[in-house]
Length: 471
Image (tube, rainbow, N blue to C red; front, side, top):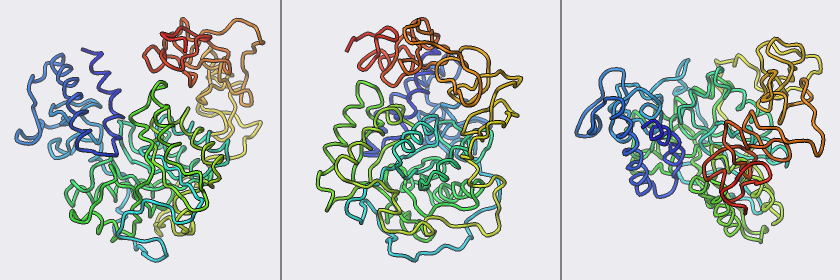
């Protein structure tokens, strides 16, 4: 039964990130989730039938009502947007308010040439291309930022405040504020994708207000300002529900897209080519008269390690200029955000990517450029700075992916025996094999160890582990 519980957790991104025909997809995916949760609920001694939801009622105090109608206290029950707010007595993570005062009363402007009170789906400047990433920050966001930086590309990130059980974006202990500061300081546009990814058209007025205002508060807590650009979850914020008028009242430009990669449907090495084909087929070779706002997700592994680089190459090869959404609409950067005049962020906005200091010693066991250039040499945690920017002294820190600029690293020579991966990284770049690794024996195309078809199937690197296919 434990494997079923883990499977339901693994399925969360596919449930959350269906932006197209939402009702159809939700029906299929939530039914699958229901079977998984039902199985796990039996192992935990809970009811064998749905115990909460419409026509049933709320969960007992302290419990959350899952999408499938079961009460519980763990992430599958309480993480948004699956958690049913109306039947969870305020226990869903999306019901938790960010710290600080409300932003609802801060004056908003609706000036400028970018339209309000409409869906915007296309750039207005021919030859521009807006890459947009939804639902982060998440564990793959740094990789997306790395690819963008390597190619000198600026994009737009539509940020969700709390989803996938990741915690709140303004909580410094989660690491998300640091990623968001990096994002901003590297020239990307930050925009809102609501607090916990609720359907704004189907929401009550109260929930709709919370979804927008809570995310503003979290942004304000990090930066002292919040975005004027909003992408509604599932692309829906219609006029009949009052959503579009409310967004306009708050001074938002509502942004959708005219090119959907559907990367959430193809997040495995053997399927991501489908998204590449969709992207390539959707981009005209005539950049003189065309422009695009594209949709993908920085919470998807294949988007981070595969699709993003492909999109950038295609854009450049076909003569487009990749810019943030605001720029492709002809909007000046000073119009992208609203400042809270009474708030000063505790961490300077531009502190995310300081120049690394060769003498800065770590004080908390973190290291590397994204942690202020701190070094591990001589630290109590260990001398090696790992791929994920933590100090240590074992193979997982000192071998493949070890950052030589910020500590000591083990040396290897061409032709020497491959190292069994202790950190999940593999391939020629890291001189590590997955065979015998606790992460799994297969090395995926993206250079990660695992044991499912996503790692062992198409694209698997058979020189750095075992594969079910030698393709």
